[in-house]
Length: 322
Image (tube, rainbow, N blue to C red; front, side):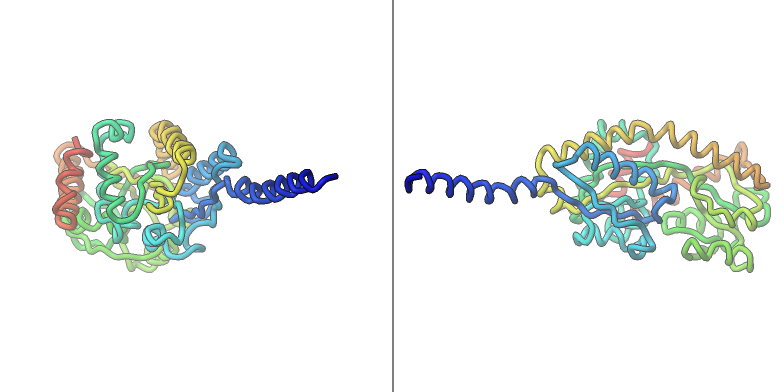
C-alpha cells in the first residue's frame, strides 16, 4: 500500500469521525415542564403532546419532560423559568405567569375559538406581546370553564361577606361582588373549607380533587371564563430551532387544538355528572341574575387587564371578545 493510498484512508477516517458528532447532534433535546403535577388532568394533554413530538420527531427533536409543579418548583415561577431558559418548553395556565406577561390573563376571556384567533390577528398579537418578554407562544392544549363552589347557598349574584379562595384571575370579578379574596395552594383548599377559613373557592369544572367533594355542597351556574393550558417556549430556544423542528411543533399544536372543543365539552359534562353523583347541588342563576353574574365577570376582568396593561389590554379585548 503506497503513501498516497494510506493518506486517503486516513483522511476518510478522520472525516468520518468528524461527521459522527454532527450526525448525533442532529436531534435537538428541549427540557419541558408543566405547572401541574404529572398525570394531573391539566398536564395530561401536554404529556401526550410530548409523546407524539418524540415519536414523530425521532432523530430531529425530542422533549425531555422533567415533570410538573410542585416537584419542579412553584407553578407561579414556571413562566419566569421559561423566560430565563431554565426550561425550553412548558405548559402553563395564563394567570400562573401573569407576573411575567400580565396580558396572559386576557387569554381566558377569549370568546372566539383558537382557530379563529389564528386567522383574525389575535394569535399573532398575543405572540408579539409574549416575544417582547422573551417567550414564544406556541398554542394551547386544554380548555375548560370556571365555577364558584360553596359550602352554603346564596340567593343571588352577591358574594358580600364571603371569603373565597381564588387565583389571581378571579380577583377582579369576585371582589366586585363583595367577596374577600384569599390565596392558598391546592392542598390547603380542603383544610380551609373544613375549618371555616374560607366559604368557597373558584375552580374549573375539571380537575376537582377527590377530597373537595366532602366539603363542597354547591356549584354556582353559569360558568365563566375559559381557562386554558398554554404551551410556551423560551424565545432564544425557539429562534435556534431549524425550520423542520419549528414546523413539527407548529403542525402538532394545531392538530391538538383541533380536538380541544370536543374534549372540553366531554370533560366538563363528565365533571358535572360526577359532582351531581357526589351530592354537589347546583345554584343556577337565571334571567337578570344570570346576566349580572356573567356581565360582571366579563367587565371586571377586562377592566383589571386594561389597568395592568393600558396598551395591550384594550387591543386584546377587540381581538378576543365578541
